[in-house]
Image 1 (cartoon, rainbow, N blue to C red):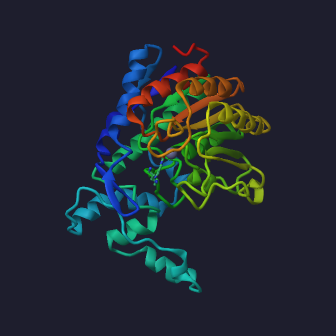
Image 2: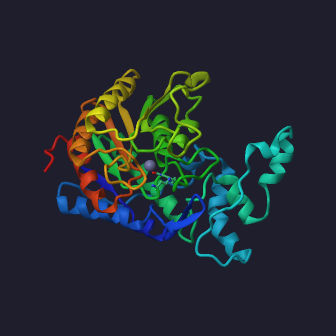
Length: 356
Ligand code: SP5
Ligand code: ZN
């Protein structure tokens, strides 16, 4: 299988995040992608190449220009405003209740706050997504990895894998969140819609709900989003990911959330995966974009499912058995030692190769 990787992810060199006010070692670190790359190299069955530059246009097709400009200039402003930190994590966010009864004009003035801490809070969601000197460059490379992977599939590959880092599925039109800055899967899906004229399905099997992808395609009839994830009643991102969220307007019925209980194992997961694949096969089209996370793994420190490498092999096999061509993009997964083995198992399953 062709795989796309860029070493520019190394510049997104984060060390800490905060969870419930406590500073802890970062989960989303460079070692994750390096572990996957090394395991795929050692397997011998993957042809790993670099991405090509796709520029800003496909990003602006999905994201708000203000978010893009914020990410582009953030670190420059951190330095210019004399903030002596290795990473910027905001501490003040615009809770909607702050603006109760106020008109949109007043809100626009607030968004334009010159203080970089204010802008970071405006465009951010949470306290666990640090921005560092190399973040923008790495996030741009991650998008290029996703778009290059999509190019390979549009050009005829049956399946290709993009080793995206940073991940993308929590990033919404005008929001960075959950270790994500640009929504790699959404940008790839939009590019495929535009280049093929076909409808595209997105299967999100990261442990967390892909709130960003859901939001971006909420009113769209040409992109169907289906996600299996930890129930937001107990898991991040808390405020989206429930069964009742099915899309609006032309997107009515095109969003399917399948929240799952703690302890979900291979057997239970694969049964729900079959439902997800059925829903994706209801729509015409030849391509499925897979948001692939391994934070569903039994040892993952953030997730509470108990999937195994054997389960991933079978999941990959079932997704490929749809007959759709697959643009497989890396999202989360935080048990670093197992990430390569889990990715290898999933991708070998998708290629019809044996588990080992
Ligand atoms: C792409 C992706 O997987 N993003 C995940 C972002 C999760 N952010 C952390 C949320 C806080 C989780 N609660 C801590 C539980 C530790 N046992
Ligand atoms: Zn996740």
